[in-house]
Length: 592
Ligand code: SF4
Picture 1 (cartoon, rainbow, N blue to C red):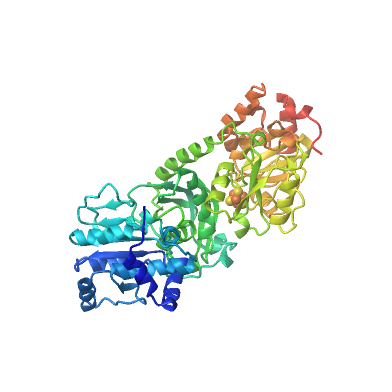
Picture 2 (cartoon, rainbow, N blue to C red; picture 1 turned 120 degrees about the vertical axis):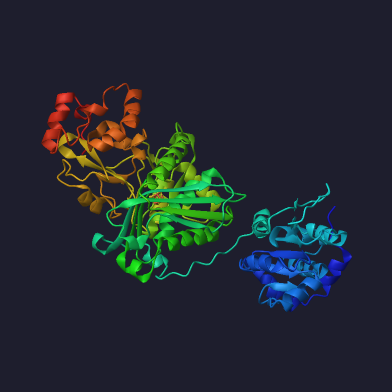
């Protein structure tokens, strides 16, 4: 049974309550992530350890009088202001006890300990010899949930309730303690030569203003033995004239006790939001289709890739400190090495996408919303179901579910599938209600399966556009990389301007390549059978997915019935091709 010793209770009783309130509030509101009980007298190593802890705002109670004296002599500032507090173990735990009694409103020693263990998180560090007195002190602290860490070799007794870890390198003591107790560390943003604010999230960096234009893949993965805060740049920096979509790769490796592979994609999708807040940076796209532009003005002011990595490190800690404790960033602009990351990333994307394979909308009772892109498109919302990914294609039903677990109050919310209005269109009362609310009334209804009736909006982060071709009774699909004119007479840029304006235009939708592999893709309008034209590169890239859908319906050879720019560049030519190959859309009911 756990207990608080009489002398600790006595120290708590004699504490100055005004002082306890003033100092202890930081442990409650998170401005002080936790405390360390520093045991031992190793004056040579203590300053480095103390520096690494106080830099993270952790309070260090120096329990050994001799060590406190040496630190003072060495010029280390002692006191609450510097967060290095000379206080013996009984005094320190008495303080923690009183904080728990006051802020936790506890009235029994057991309740006080419960509160202290859960809310006031600390750990003991023993620097020096593990004498019986020091081990006894650490054991008292273990009652408060404090594990014991040391660079000395330790032999833990079997009955310790907390971890006892000896033989640690000096420079890993702080990080190990932080991870053992799950302390949330606030990391300040780096000093930047430009402003950083949500106000810049929708900023456009046009071609003639861009001093760097990069294009490539971004990947967040769980790593091991990471060096928290390490930012590595591989290749030339922003001031090297990187214009014209130069190769780019961003690898963010994270780890933490609560980190799970399912969270990686959620973190990855946040990159856009975090980087777009830099004045002079425009991030668009996701996964292997990411474009990063930096204005010449920002580069002239001194903005470099290192700053972007440091922002990622700080913001990830501050936004997701509940699941991660280490963040390591690598930014690649070396043309030789960027493709290697892209290849690795593609294998990860494929693995992620397979998780949902075969799951249908009918099997679940909950969909999810995503409003992450309201930072670039204010009235945007995606409604995500197992068979309807977000517009970007990088946020699917599993990701949204994981995002809600990580941040219950965040850009993703669960929406119960209630009040079916139209199964063909994929409309529910509950979904319409949430779409109205999230768009401030801009949307009245949201169809998951139709591009003709109440389609959802597109924020700009899509890599395909599907548009109706009225003469052909079908649709054309083009990818972002296609530079020619389409049978509609418009090219990507013209269509993008209309579709990406965020106000849905029936007959035109922006979506991901991945969406085209879903049986529910525009199912309310006839589905994949409506596809009569695609740009050649996209058709070939998506051939396996489309062939699989067609094969399931017993329609062999369907993909070759789809015209490309090689067979048709006008609607008349598309129609002629359809008649020549017997395209199924000819026999379907009129789209309009
Ligand atoms: S496109 Fe939609 S799903 Fe993707 S991040 Fe933006 S709001 Fe979320």
